[in-house]
Image (tube, rainbow, N blue to C red; front, side, top):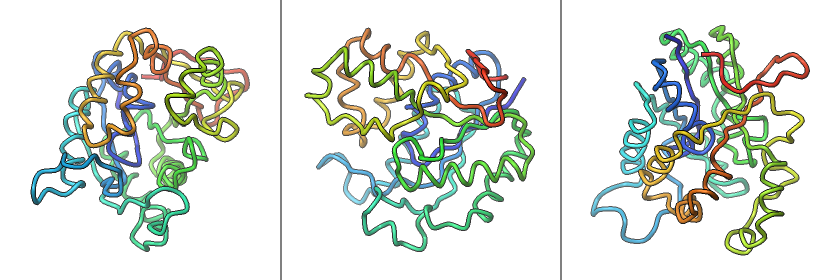
Length: 257
């Protein structure tokens, strides 16, 4: 049995870029652990969805537990840093926000989990955090340092193939009309930098169910939940990674578990 640890910024992030590999790893008998840096308390939430007296942080913790159970995680660790909010918002200045955390201190906390679990593989984000969110960028810095501290042999930057998304938008122009597309000049990684493409289409229904588990974040998932299976498979049927320290020309179809 190998151990896969997926490090994410907020509850719900685990679904987008690693939900499929988590479920596949669990199905193959490996141990899966999710570590989430923040409570996601600054996420947008539809009116009326929270119960009286219920905080968004409390609800998102329960949603995370539901989602990760579906995805096969044996353990969930929350580091309980404050959500930093989107780039350029006043919350970025909060001294307690994850984006302002001391990297050495935060990395030591993550490294303790990696050592305790004897992790074989850890996933983090690319240096831009996928799309520039301050918490995602910090996941990269903290994750890289924690892997160094703990000696995890395999470190993978979860990303999205910029070229794949560009091709989908070109082939389906109505998608850009339905939702604001990302800035593809800075979103994800170019295909030339992707080392590992994992086909997760076989667990797509579980991945969709995990999206549904995050009911407060329907603004993030709504456009995808309405997609027919074929379109959902085109967007979420693969998961992309860049293996840190990989030899030139590496092309993998799975993580080393």
